[in-house]
Image (tube, rainbow, N blue to C red; front, top):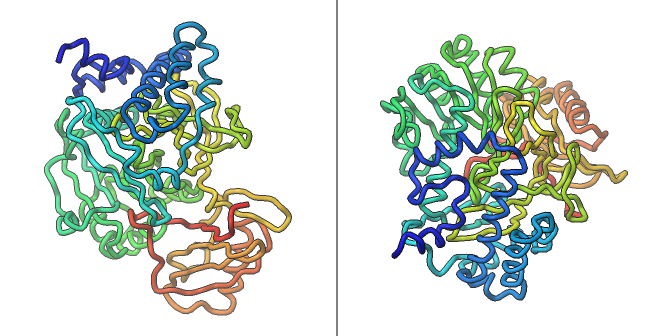
Length: 462
C-alpha cells in the first residue's frame, strides 16, 4: 500500500499525528496542541469530523443504510472548503445517537474493515450504573491516544514518577489475586517512557479494613480512588493512627466529587484533590489543569457538545446534555453520542490553553432530585449524612416526588434520636422536606464496574 493511500485512510492527520503514530510522537503533538487558540483547535476538529462522517458512511453498515450520512459527508466537506462558518450548523443537523440506540444497533455500528495499522482491535464493554451493557470496538490508535492522554494528565499535575502510586479501583477477577502486591513501576503507559517508582492496587470490593490496612502499609504518595469510599476509608485509617504520612494527592474517578469530601481531604489529610471526567466508550473527556483547576475538554481526542433542550450549544454558565464524538475511532464510529450526562459550560481558562472548559459535570438524569413543585437539581451536599456517627455508608433513593428512602449501612442499630437526625440531615442535604424512610442494610451493592450512586431517582423521566 502506498504512503499516500495510508495517509488517506488515516484521516487528515490531526492532531499532529505522525504517519505511523507512536506514543512519544503523540505526546509531543499534544504538548504543542494544548496551547493552540480555540479557533485552531475547532478548525482541526472540523476537518477530522468531515473525514470521519465520510468514513462512517462508506464503511459502517448502520450509517451506510441511512438516508443522511452520505449527503452529510458531502455537505460538511463542501462547507469546510468554501464556507467554514456553516460547518457547526450543518454538524448539528446530524441526528443524536443515544445509549439505547447503541445497544439496539449492536454490530451494525462496527466498520466492516479498518486500515491495517489500526489493528489489532479491542473490545470495550461498559454497563455504567444501569447494568445494561454497551459494547464498542477500540483500535490501536485510540488505545495509544488514551495512553498519551494519561501521561498528559500526569504531566499537567507535575507528578514525580519516582514516587509511590496506589490505586483502589475495579479490578478484573483474574487480577484480584495480586491485590496489594508491590510492583517495581507504575506500569504502562508511564513505565514505557519514564523510570517510575513502586505501585500497588486493590480491588474496590475489598473490605474497608483490608483497604485501610493496605493504604497504611503501602503509604503511597499518590492515590487513585472512587469518591464514594473516601469518607469511610479516612475513618478507618484514622482508627489506625492518623493519615498515610507520604500521601500528597488523591485522584478521584468515575463518580461526582462532593465538595465536602474535597474540603475534608484538605483539612484532615492536608492533600490536594483532583478528579477527571471519562466514559469507557470514548475515553478521557476532560482533565483539570493545575494552574486554575479548570476542567479542560480533551479536544484532540473528541468533540464535546453541551446542548440545551432545543439542541443548541449552551453558553458559559448554562447547563445542558453532554454529546460526544470520538474523533479517531474508525472501528465503531460514535457520531454525536449522547452519553446521558449533564454539564455546565465554563469560560475560557486563564492558564492559556485553548482547550474548552466544563465548569461542572452535574451527573445523569437518574441522579436528579425532583420535587412536587416542578423543580429539579443535582444534590451536592450528601456528605452531611456522615454526621450521624453510626452510618458507615449511605444511598439516597427517590421513590416518588415527595418520598426518599435512605439506605444505610450502620455500625449498629440507629437510636430514635439518630433516626430523627438522619431524617433532618437528608432533608437538608436534598433541599426539600421529603418524607424519609430509613432502611438499614448489611451492604449497598456497587455497579458492575465499581461505580456507586449516592443519589438515585426511580421516578420516570418526564
